[in-house]
Length: 314
Length: 276
Image 1 (tube, rainbow over the protein chains, first blue to last red):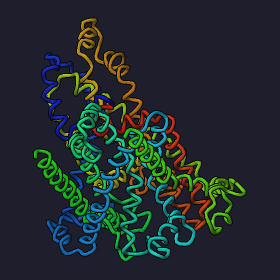
Image 2: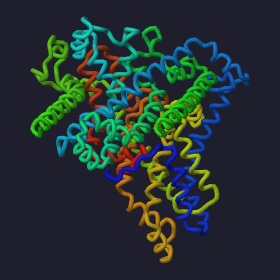
Image 3: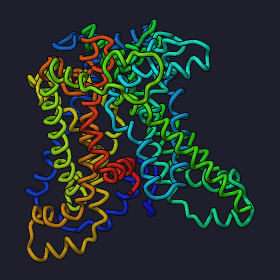
């Protein structure tokens, strides 16, 4: 952990690639070993990944039901997307959910990580386990658990809620509360992952820097601003990138906590794919929405990475 | 000055412990609830311990659902996915890292790029494909689409690259074949990585909801995390029972984490591209 080597996931392999050209043994390997090592993976990849991806693109130009062939209808599915109100709403809700989770979840991860690295020995292990344990639970367990915690009549979390707002709230039936609460549950569930990455980043910072700063009379806040924040920045970029990609794919929590309600106020894109393809039996249109999600993730994560890189350069 | 500083330190440590305890409290509260009889669950006030502890919730779930069957489904599918992901990824990464063949860099480029493709976007075509294979409501249908794991290949390649090439050259001089070199040198030298990746893959596969939920819709083919939601729907608000199902679903992964804590944290960091 002390030798933590942090870089953005996409930059890394390229650099490696250049490095290993030098180390590769020059002679060409025999065909049989190559085939045996590579073929199983490549076949699985082609059948389960490349083919489905291409198939999805093709489907998006047809009016196919979920199972069975359809007619080629050109760009009609794409035109339909533009005027589809529930689709537009689901995109807006997904972005709202992303706004509610990505930055808070990253910030909280850094705060918790800073709290954990200060501790020593078994106390550190226990505290870290407290923060990390929710992350390894299935989504359905997490949603059952919070459904109980936030139950209108018997939920224990209704005590703090009624202290704050003055009365009990049926959070998943209230259009204003529903999405922020889904976001809250998501943060509780996934934060441990961020905590771990930040801990690795923090351990990578040499303690001598803090000692030197303390000698110079720098206070806690000053040390954070001048040492911790800039040196942990590469990890922050990494966490923000992961967060954006993961949270754009939200489905489980919404489906299990609110089913997209109340009044569609928590309807999200993956749920819309599910609805079109699996409930309404419109495989073609479902594939179109799925492609849109794919494009949305690619475009947004590239934009975010660009913004973060520019900040890094300053 | 020094004393005041350590007082602040103590205060922060205390705050940390309180926050951590609050963070994990929902888990404690869930487990306690499952051990209460239903009338205590809905009793007013906060009771941190059950007055009349009972396993009735668990017994109900075991009696009234086929959770045993779901357990078998989950264990078989998550176990198979883990085994195959490790096998396919290690082999492929070995070839990319150590063997010289045309298309090697292209192959790795495609694997890295596929990291960007959101798997939930593929549900439609995966379902069509599994239907073509006749694998709806079958173990195979749950397993196959979960085999895509570019990260495992990337992690293995990184570690295979780091093994000094003297090991391989010496073996080649001794006349060892590729399979021997792979099995006798590269696999044993990366056991730690394999263990970490295997445990982590198992946990993630066990937890996966969306895909098993779509492909395994019959009662007998469900995985545990999908099945317990049906318990919820079937029995309404009977919290001790619902949560007992949830605890049973979380038990294997929670146990795996608590036993192999360091391996799991290692795997999380490896999969994020940070060397543990």
